[in-house]
Image 1 (cartoon, rainbow, N blue to C red):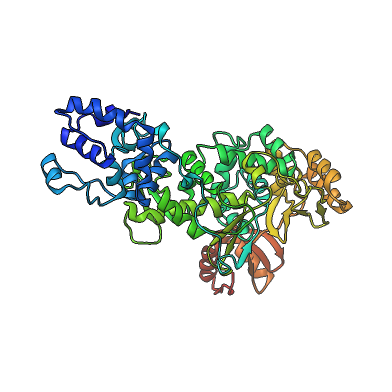
Image 2: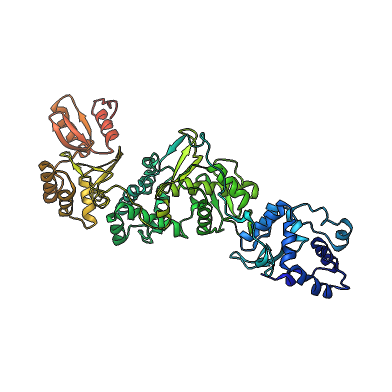
Length: 551
């Protein structure tokens, strides 16, 4: 950053006199050049600097401390939003109004003491205007007790934490379900419907969000299909290692975009945000909160709005992102007045979404059906946030249960790798009370065969993981493998007539080509789509037919 001499370049002699007056320095320079030569060394005197800072009002000292905490600089829009404006005025008006004697803000107090300057610097989003402390002043500014990092917000009230919702590791089971669904090529609608079965255990987790997390973890290829080896390793890992893998993927990913997944928001246009930068900022704010204590979520978000509102906004830009509220008026959420609708919503989502799914925080609500208003870190939070497997997760040793009606019941704590493989041979019937329900059908077996799986794979799976396999099920599977489908059930339209002679006459008529297999002397199947044609021909023959209700 520029030093003090560079920061004062362009200031007129009157401005230098004001700075000297604010510092209590005698100043009788005849011109600007001499003024620089006399004033700058005096401002860099550590003892004089200490005295000037000691005399600052509390709000000005707070502004200076904030700059020190941010390595001596801060985006100018953010600085003035927090600490007030510096009024723009020319030398004539300045000397007439003397704003330095009655400053309107903490920023103005620092400005006329030359403790803060402003300039454009390079930033990730392009040149950006900053408030900054001159480079040679920065190392000699005395520290303040207020520089100690304090947690943002406050402890949760009893009302805010009245109904706790404990974190869990169920995301591992949902990941197994989703990986199997993707491998089977289930339609998008069926995959999206999985969210309905996840609501109670992992609120806000959607298949779309989990699919992006699995992709960030390297488990999916460019087509969104499971990669065989990484998927096998993930499913065979113990639950602690698997959970740590997902936590690391989320923590380090620049492709998992929390903002774009925040519920209630709709995004338009080609603008881009930096999800990794925003996530790291929120995690840094969270690192200051006490471990194991319930903390207020609304107060935490409000404190970020007050102290660090631009944590995800380059140059404090609140106008170039095109975001709408899905449920409110059809208008863009632009401007700082919508901070809570967008940036605050992201803070809440990161805590009640990914951090809760991944087992890092518990959440709590004022009422059972109310949104979370409090959170607390679990004992293993540090392990997960640092990429280490947490200890104490349950082992996966529960057996599958196979029944003679070709159904499989697979408990949640059966090996995930076994359930993933079993799902490829089955039709999924949902989940009930922690048990995943599957049916073995000819269609599911045929699909598995098309994917290169044989009956031997299924039999091996049942022998290894099922508690017992009924002999009748084994016999049915072997007969299907040898003979295919040996029994069929289908819907058909049946015509019943009053006598065998009438049926014979109908077969001999033009209607004969619409009739199928006989079911008896007076009953026959009518081919699909021929009902009206047969009724018309019957009428021509002198018989009025009727369609029974429900047919």
